[in-house]
Image (tube, rainbow, N blue to C red; front, top):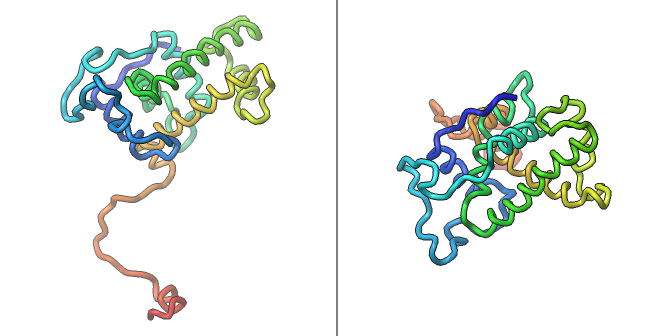
Length: 208
């Protein structure tokens, strides 16, 4: 796998904050409410940012490739949609774990531990890093950590990592236009005229 093209920094931050406000897997209070004293204001989404302007990103080049490989195991490309890495989900995850908020700080520790574990376990089993494994090998490894309640004791922490990555990957992917198309979501589309409820529904409700 070659190096991944980065998305615009402002778009990545905007995406992260939008997902934080709208995706159901985020159970903590809003980001603005979670900002500790001294961090200042949240990013202004209409401004352009360069790396380091707000917070430093976390992933090294190798870590981004590992994350991309795992994201594509979780959400691979198919006949309807691109893969998670093709819509730049790794950039979302990098922004997410790099943000200076309590929830993200906890996730950063878990994600970085998990990335390291993936390569260690891949070397142990297949003598290659995770990104270099065949798809079948990646799936065999992920099968051991994909469901925390049934994971072996030695895999409990990696299973927590996988669960977090699955939530972040799905939450990011399904807030993109490609992800919403995959869900066949057609909201926010203007109607030429409003037809109202079907007559049979009004009759059933005794409103016709």
